[in-house]
Length: 113
Length: 116
Image (cartoon, rainbow over the protein chains, first blue to last red):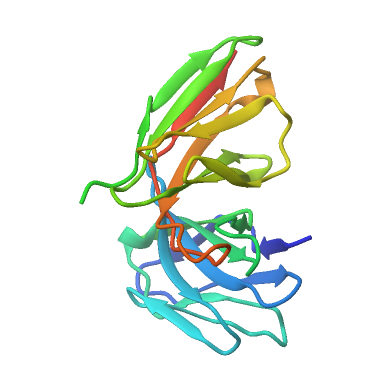
């Protein structure tokens, strides 16, 4: 079946540091890939997505590129802010599975001023 | 436009009881999906409803059930509660169009269920 593996946290960075959160996946076919963010006490918010190989999703300074050859979708940001502190989830959707998302375990990011 | 709302936000039950959680989707959205979030198992898909019909189901026991009403509001029910059912239950709504193609989902804040 489908699965998503992402680096365990917490990841602790200083403000303005470079961020990478690794995500790899296993899926049959060609899934769509997503990064969601969860702030304390809130539900998930879609951060960015990519629907086919070599697509780059980007939003609010975050980027991730769909790499089919390495089955990866790593999240990056050039300069993090304290307000980026949250839990980040990598997820995939199989083309024939409707709205069912398969999530990674989540990575907590803590940014210190 | 109002977002996805879930009620109640917090719930405490004891083992053996049953519980019903409610989710009101964004206006115009016809699909509602439910997820369970726990520290040990992470986020897991429970089921999806579209136009009052269950169209996808995850790997949960029959104690977990759901339904959707004609106004797209959805409820999920857990019977004979176990300690391991303590979790944050999230619902997500989407337009749900295009058959089995993925539609962007919008998540509610969740209902935190504690089973004692």
